[in-house]
Image (cartoon, rainbow, N blue to C red; front, top):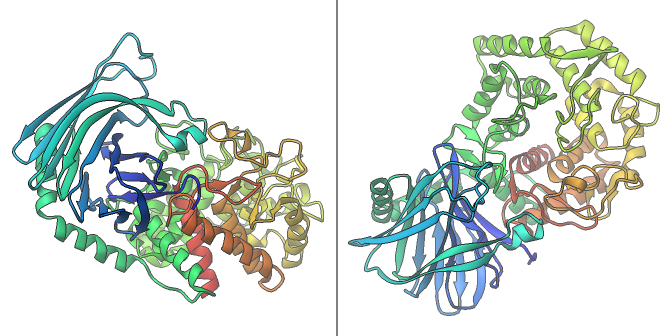
Length: 562
C-alpha cells in the first residue's frame, strides 16, 4: 500500500474524516463544516493494537485490529462521527480543534465536563500576543459532544506533540502541532458531534446515537443507488468506475453545491464545478448539474472561487458547453435565461488582434501567469460564440486561431508561445471543429511523445523544457504546471483520443485508464481520485479527492461503455 494511503469519509454536509491507512500513522483529522467555516476537531482516535487490515465500504470504513473491529461512519447530513467497536477497548481521544486555516498555537483552551452518558469538550480560541494575529484575529468557541451507552472516561488532559505525515511530505507548515490528549474512552459505540453551541452538540450526538442503525442503513441504500455499472473491459476498471461515482457524489454538499476537493478545497469553485457538471448528471444529480449551469450563467462576473478576485477566463465557455451537454434538462424558458446570462459574459470578453485575451493566473493553470491569448480559452470562447449564434465570430476566431496557433504540425499553447502543453486536448474537447480529424492526429502525434509519461499520464509541459520537474514539489507550486500530471486532464485526453481515432490511440487510452484506475483503487485516499501525480512515477498528490478528476474518469468510462 502507498506510503501515504488513507481513507476518506464524508457526511455530504461539508464535513469529512480523513483517516490514515498505515498502522504507524495517526489520523489526519475529523472535520466538520459549521456555517461557511470548516473546523478540524479530532486529530486521532488511538487503539493500542496492531492494525491488520482496512476496508472502505464507501458508506463507512472498517478497520481490523488484532482482537477486534472498528467501524467508522459519518451519517449523511449530520455533524457527527459514529464509532462502533466489536469489543469495547480503550480508545485514545486526541483533539486539535481549529478553523482549518487558523494555525495559531497560543490561546487554545480545552475544558471537559460530563452530563449523563455524554462528555462535552469545550474548545476556546482566544487571541494571544505571542501569536501573529494579523492573519487570523477572530476568537471563537467550539463544542464537541461524545455520547455513548455505558461510557467510561479516563482523563489524561495533556498536551502532546503530533506530526501530520501528509502535511510534512508536502512541506506544508505547520506539520507538527501541540494537540490535546483528553484521555481514553471505553464504550462499544459512541458518537462525536460538533456545534457552536453546547446544547446543539449534545442534542446532535444523542440523536445520532439513538438513530444510528437507521442512519447507517440510509447511507448504505444511498451508496447502492449511486454506484452503477457500464460495459467496461475488466472488473478492475468497473470497480474504479463505481468508486469514482461514489467519490463525486461524496463531494456534493446537501444536494446544493459541489466542493472542489478534500481536504483543502472545501468550497465550490467555478471552473471545477462546471467541468464536473456533466458527470454529475451521469450519476443522477440532474437537478444540481442544471443548477450549476444556471447559477454561474446568472453571475455578474465569473471568479475562480469564493473570495477570489481572479476571473476564470474560460468559465463562460464551460457554461456554454455544459448547457449543450445537458440540454434535455432545460425548458425553453430556462435556456433563454441561461443564454441571456451567457450574452452578458460574452460582452465581458476582451478581444485583441482577433483573439480573446485575459490577465495572468486566470486559466486552469493558475500558478502560471499565462496571460494574453491561450489555446483552450480560444476554443471555449468559440464554443460560447457558437452557442449564442454569433457565426461571424466563430468563423473569425477559428480562422485567427488556425493562423496564429497552428503551425501545420501542432497547436501552440499561446500566441507567440510554442511551448508544448496538454491544453490542446482541452481545445479539442471544447471545439473539435478547430482542426480536421487528420490535423488533430498530426497534432497529437507530435505532442504525445513530448508529454507522455511511461506510467500512463501526460506531463503539463514538454519533458525537454528547462523548467520541467519530474517530482512533485508539494505546497511549493514549482512542479504543478511544469511536470505534474493532472488526472482530470489525463482522463479528458483519453476521451479526446478515443473520439479522434480509437484504434490508433488504443494503447494510450488503455494506459491512462489503467493508471487512473490504479490511483483510485490503491493509492492516496482509497476509492477516491486525487488531484495529480508526479511525472516521474504514478503517485497520488495534492487533494486526495478531487471533483474534476473523478468527473472526467466517469465521462471517459461512459464514452467507452456506450
